[in-house]
Length: 339
Image (cartoon, rainbow, N blue to C red; front, side, top):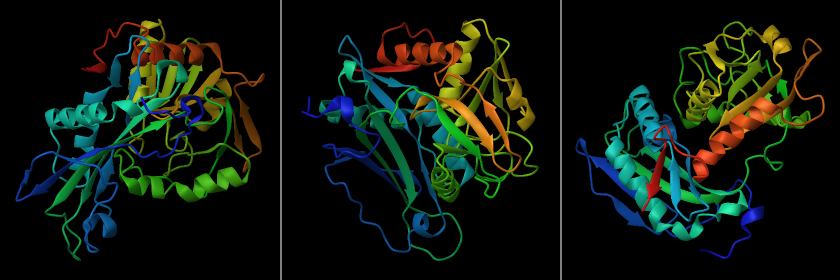
């Protein structure tokens, strides 16, 4: 294991030894290659640079108390990447090829998987880009699929703690029938200005309402929203929201905790009724929300009056993390153990 200050690494890029790559040419994927270079040779007219033919995923590997390495929801990430590839007309990567490349890159970089007690993990970033040179707006004929890894700490500096959010109406992350349900870089580029605006106002993150009516809850920055009330787990239904694998996992855990789960449109005024609220995603798992301020109306929706995460979100977080680290049985088949 590498000699790093594991308990104090942030959520950023740290170079590891190897990445894995595969190129698509003549209508088929080639051989999987291992590289020690952090760079790629890319034509200046590549479609990824001009027309946004780019997609990515994010998943994690965890070192357990037993020393075993577990990758969380590998197949679900592969299937979501397939959906994104369909959405922007890129060739699909089979689940089998995805699994082979993910497990290979994790094995090659095992020395960078943080120790169990550190609270850190190995972030896995699969990336597919259009590489053929063209100036017309149409899909590329050649692609590159790369997976690199980097050890990461908590997404927010405070870890599992409450954060303030602010509703941003001036900008939309995605249109209702756009690319919001796909994990493409353009969605994140579209969020940068709103995110900066939120930070400039002293908030941890921006909070989006739906683009059509500005009436319904959409997303919390780059994460899904969760509301808790009356033993019910509520999360928005929208065609512009990325289907979060973490959210899907938490919904199953909530059901097993005896909770009711509702996936439906959630109007802004319903924020007044939630006992707890949070944002969920791969990076933070759950980020409990302290409050959401609507500066336009002057309303403030407060979920953590004492500044501490609520009991339901805390239990959901702990149960999911226990599965990821191997501290609890994986009854759902979510974990892939790397031999």
